[in-house]
Length: 89
Image 1 (tube, rainbow, N blue to C red):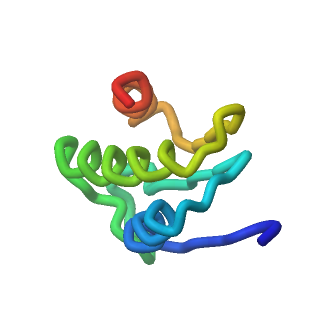
Image 2: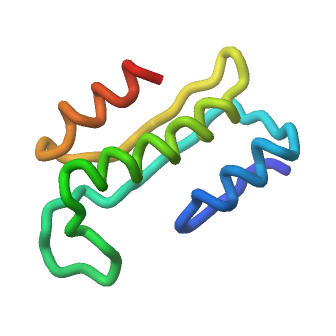
Image 3: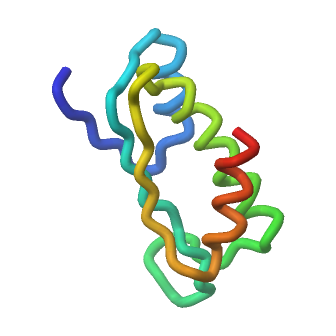
């Protein structure tokens, strides 16, 4: 499989990890948690957003090839928290 797009990805990430798949690059575009009206949930509490992200990043990291990388889109609002989660993983 050359490319794969997954929407809300927690279940899919778990399945991919179980399948033994590995990827060179993963791009994640999570909710920015700006608390603005969107068609998706963008109003997490700080703690809930961190749990949401940590769960997904734990699985994404397991999917990376040894020389792979993860790209994450985020705004300044949650950047320090995201960096902390990534550093922990």
